[in-house]
Image (tube, rainbow, N blue to C red):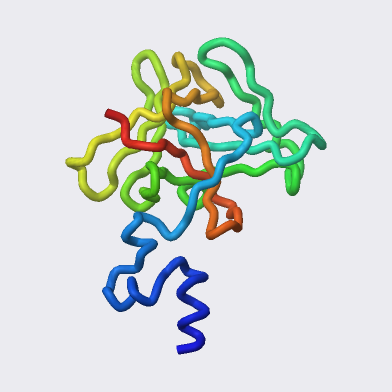
Length: 186
């Protein structure tokens, strides 16, 4: 019982919620918290896959000023030069390139297992969508767009209400980024 008493608060659980069969953290939607990040240190990028017919989401973070991790052009769409691919970026940059590095969160709900972030090319734009993975009757969300169609690495700009947050366990910041919105878009 002594080990259980120490484990429960550390895991965000109470004895009452455990006895009731529903851990309080799960009833709230997530075992993890979301904490703010300095948005100016991050960029969302539609990164080409293979010959560039498709793209995927990359998120780059500038962790130190030792050297730039990326260069972003101006205009719409803005071309991004991923400078971090040309040097050992350990301790200087972070690169989040898949669902292990980022996921969707809306308010208190970590939706990483229920939604996937996908880059979709349309006739006139490149869009970042959050699409349901389990229940296809759930709605998709337009998260960001490039502001035009071009080839190469392109900057994605958030739609109103979307931002980045960092996953945290209690007060400990973790190496996972949330594409975040306070409440579901109407």
